[in-house]
Length: 416
Image 1 (cartoon, rainbow, N blue to C red):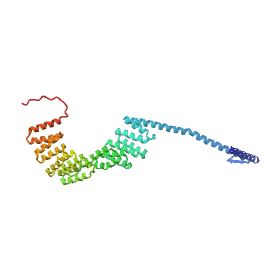
Image 2 (spheres, helix red, strand yellow):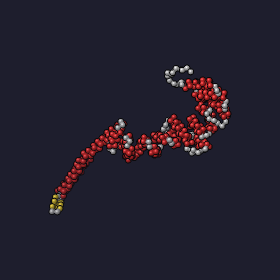
Image 3 (cartoon, helix red, strand yellow):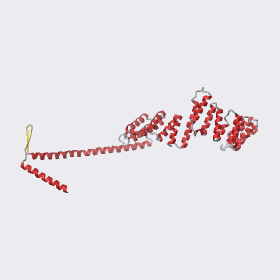
Image 4 (tube, rainbow, N blue to C red):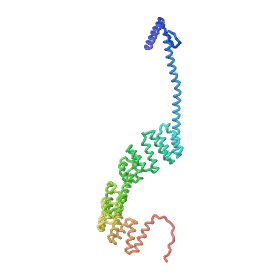
């Protein structure tokens, strides 16, 4: 209030002073241009200038206010375009989920530039183009996605990998995945895709290098990783001999196999299937004596019925010593049907026919297995005990037919 009162006093004082000056001397102003002249007092000119300034200020304000509806119209148009684009995007995504690929691609592409999230539009449109086998269009749409949102390379790259996998483009897919892995070394889905590509390429060496990371980041559960490891090392073992030239001698083949086996982690070296695979390859490489020694060490380290059966199939350097080794296991495992079968086979190798038959019968008494029936039948036939051999064979056939369904059979015909 005080400020307003003070301002009013100043205005009144200034007005009084100006009024006094106007009365004392109105002044004189002459403006001449070409042949025209304007004569007026100084104070009239000043008042005209002041009024002109107010008029110009009002005109400028009026002009900008007149433009304001245009800006609102522009904003309205932008909002309307965004809303239409959003609607097209939604319809395009629905069409994509319904498998209407052409419609999805058209709607998503049309609304991509106006959409607030062009990345989604381009990626989804690329997927629709791929489903129509339009490879060039799909690649172009992915490139447009990169151009619109360069920082989304990971999402775009994963889509590209999925498309390349479905096309069967394994080498380009691997290159893309390795680039994505450099961008995001701990991205679990990228690692899972990389694992799948290595499996399809049968690149077991690279896959074994990837397994520690898969385990560390828990990309797969432990059971899946164990199975993957087993597959990798089994294939590496299997391909060791295949890589050698045909003319390679037994010593070279043995050294190659041994080196490959020693590269297997100690935990996997106890896997029964890998051990069996290695033994079979040793036999194939002409190193059956080495296979017998290796099996003996494995069984001594950890008892395994499957390996015990296998021990009876391989031939060591000394058949008698091999039989004595197996006999030594009887003290600890007297009720092992697998061991009795192996003792029967080793006794046959040493030509201890009667003892071999006893061991095979003991094996059958513990567990009726086709292998034991087969071995005993064959032995009895060669010993000339046809009647007993036929009886054992019939028992074996009965065992093999236990799971046969009940079906009508013809009546037994009398022997002529």
